Length: 372
Image (tube, rainbow, N blue to C red):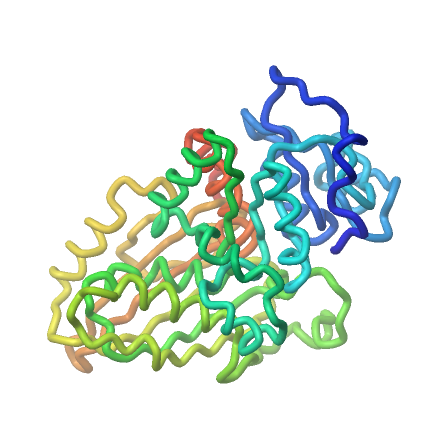
């Protein structure tokens, strides 16, 4: 949720202790992503959450909103009232962009978990999100925070941060994360001629705000398509696949992406299914080599030999990717499964944070999936 004031005037801030761990603030800590950030960062070896804000919750202990992090000792405030090195923003779209310039001017690194710095073209914001971007000059500075695709940029941001320039990361959406990890090797090889993505998400992806269509009796025992022809995450997927395909010399059909998401009656998880018509004939051995090479050494991506289930990644920062060539139709099926609140949101934000601060990429993110 938005807070009335993000950071107080400099002369009201408590002095920093240079011996302390990296001081982190979470703005909008009362939602599901904020709760996951609190859970993950509670066990982070190099970061300490020193402030968490939530509108209308000033003075409430964090555990009154998130009982699963009982014992944190944190009290929710309406503003960040202590000095911080980094801020995670979990705010509604259009809100983060109004406060980020001031944070960067203060030398505070920003990990924006919302969409305000994911898209590179300012003209895409009124088209997909319905607002004129208030800080278009920062879009070129922001790094799209999917480490598997933009690790080099995150590492360069770390070097800039070390020299005094605060980093800005636009953490990807949950659907784009699952979809891009499933399709990136194909796009990079110039193999996507036409693309249909059918995706399913648990209800936590819709956030914590009370809405009639998210009531248990509305969602249970039902599957519903939504965002038909105009889901906002389409822009991210097209942008990143286009960047990967640029310079391959192949006819990339990513601009003709058909993206259809569905809400299904489970709490967590995303399964993205990409149906690809390729630019030239391929076989399974070529696909196997392509994906093995793309994800060799990646700490959080597993290329698997059977279609993945969302339950296999629940509670973890892992992604499972599966690719198969259909000799009957000539198409390629590429599947990606993630936990939408971890690899699709908070965990991915922490992964990017680790890179920007020169920490081991896996710090705080080693937890295995939950089962059953």
